[in-house]
Length: 207
Image 1 (cartoon, helix red, strand yellow):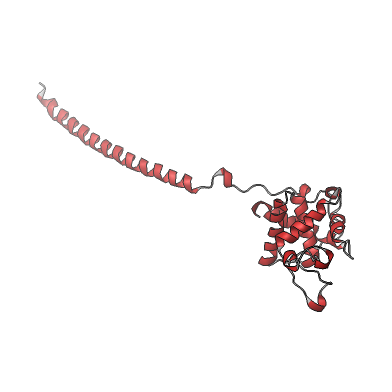
Image 2: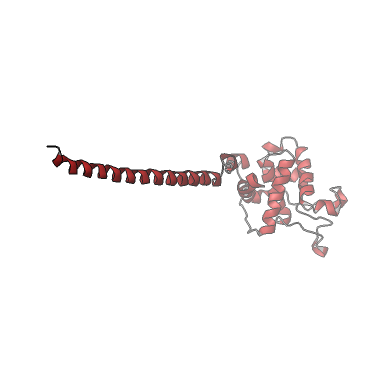
């Protein structure tokens, strides 16, 4: 009576073995694949930047130009050396413990004085003995030629003068710069405020 079911049972057993075999291979494959996925995930996570190195937001415009610009603005294209000099000014500003607004004033001043070029003596075209990024004069006590043609020294010297100007933070840029530089053209600094602010916004966090 049971004989007619035996082939079916045998077929079922064969099917189960076959199914178990496939399942076993699938499980093993899954483990291998899973390991690969985990390994890939770990690799991907280790390759991705951590939150600590995500670039900070650029300084806000109202901090860079708190009083707005005065007059028409000028802008010049900058080469790599000029950009590096702007970044050196920002680095020295940070080292002096001063903020982004001070960097804007300093960069704008250098744009007016030297177009962000670390100028040596220009011979007949020189303004007395003025040299460096800020056209500082050794004869006026700014330092030696070697010192005032060093971007960090010259920036620090400019910022030291700026610190001594009471309320410079609340002054228009051109007025604050003029208090330090005592230029024959006191209003010319104003025209560089926008480009200076753009440079500080772009490079402040990585200078």
